[in-house]
Length: 133
Image (cartoon, rainbow, N blue to C red; front, side):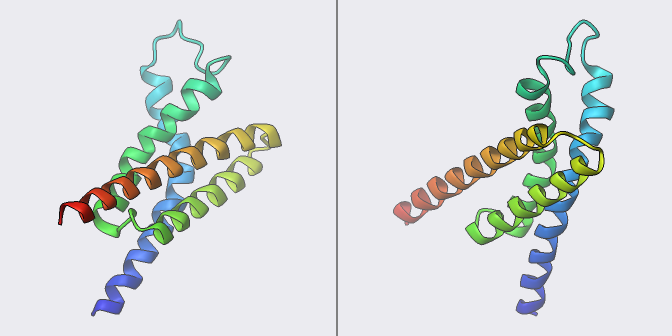
């Protein structure tokens, strides 16, 4: 039973990482574009410093929370797997839409930043939990 649970959590991490790479665009199209004030230029100059991170964080709030609470995302190997699946899914998805390599690199840099921050948080939380016990 233990082996099945571990296998299921790894499959979940991979699934959520891949899903995250596509869900970002749904958050952008169905949430940000529809509810952002019309006078804000969210596809112009602000796109890579506001819109992309916001869509990623909104999606990460869903997939990251699920992965953290139910699948053990705080463990470094799982975080790296989640990051890798997210990066692969995002790079393939964006390249299929003929995005320039520079734009894809910006997306991947933001993804890496979010995962590094989660890793630092997990390490700090794990260190404080270890020192408290």
